[in-house]
Image (cartoon, rainbow, N blue to C red):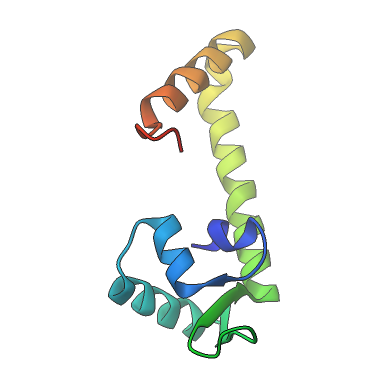
Length: 104
C-alpha cells in the first residue's frame, strides 16, 4: 500500500483497492490500520465529496523509504554470490515469472 501511494498523486480508496487487487472491505481495514499508525491520511475528495482520498503522511514516506532501502540491501546481499551478469539474468527471469497475463 505504501509503495502504491508513493508512486504518485493521492488516490481514492477505490483506485488504491483496484491497484492492490483487494475488495473495498479489505481496503477500508487496511487504511484504518495504516491511518492508526500515522502512515496514511484519509480525507474527503475536493472534487467528489462522496469519495475518500488516501495519501502518505511524512512518517509514511519515511517508513516506505526505509523499507525500500532495506529491500535493496537484502537484494544486493542475496545476489552478490552470483556476480553481476548472472544476477541480472536471475532478476530478468524472475520478472518474467511474476508478470500477469495482462502485462502489468
